Length: 94
Image 1 (cartoon, rainbow, N blue to C red):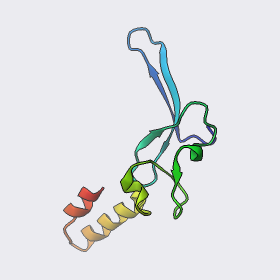
Image 2 (cartoon, rainbow, N blue to C red; image 1 turned 90 degrees about the vertical axis):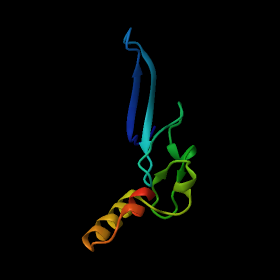
Image 3 (cartoon, rainbow, N blue to C red; image 1 turned 135 degrees about the vertical axis):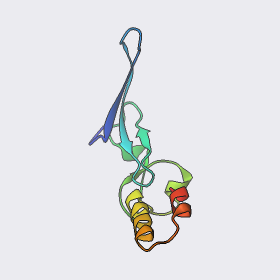
């Protein structure tokens, strides 16, 4: 994969034999670790790119309903805490 975000190697605990090896990327909206399909050189061929932040996102519906990168959500929580507001609903929304 071009510019992989990460790499997973799954091995057998008994024999140490490699069972699976795949490239990964992290969804920019929810931080989910997503596996890429074998043989894919470009993750945009199988996963969506957010048209607003132009980052790879997973296929979860919540991540495809608008641009909401995790950094923006964390900033909103930090701002609410500094102003003394309740943050329970914001945290549950993560």
